[in-house]
Length: 161
Image 1 (tube, rainbow, N blue to C red):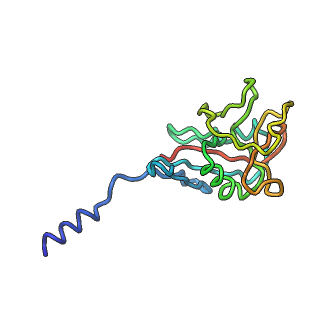
Image 2: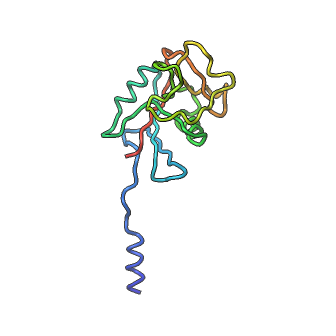
Image 3: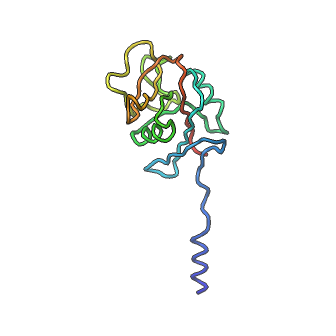
């Protein structure tokens, strides 16, 4: 009986603390479905701003050694989570842009390994920043390109710490 209690105590012992999202309010966590210890945290603004102002606002929320940037999206799983749970199916800036380069790239410098453009987008013009389209135009969270000076909500992303 004593062995059983000791074994139970060992099994119940806490492990190393799992990474968590900032506790400043409004952050939602998405574990990587292949590695549950790899968690990304997302926050959506409650106000609209230009893409540049949104990028600056995200960077101002940087935590310790974990930079906060406009969100990059790397899978359908992540896109659906952010569109459905973070933006609540509203138009919101993402970190994808072609402001300083000719090609679309993520502001956080991660590779562009996933795209989910609405049909016939991106339009080749001066609209150099990507946003989720609203639920009237998309139920799945497709992206459109828009004028970066447009005031929209925005999504920030940081790794859990």
